[in-house]
Length: 106
Image (cartoon, rainbow, N blue to C red; front, side):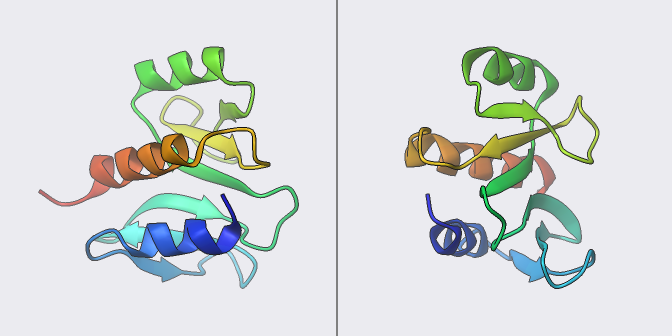
């Protein structure tokens, strides 16, 4: 998944907004004032940090070497996904959607 595709997908979530609280290099995607994705859209390699259920987080980290504990985030509730191309885009979209669902207001 490219940086542009990731940004479009994040912003396509209902009521999602892009903010830059950590400076112009880091996009933070929020819904209802809560973060669901953090990404340096110009960073090489491209990585996204996402909220994740703790049990699923462990399973994902044990299954995919591209998924690690959240970078600069609570390691129990966040994962970082390396988007260098080896993960299927559908899985990345599912993880972004799951992160959004965890924080979106009901």
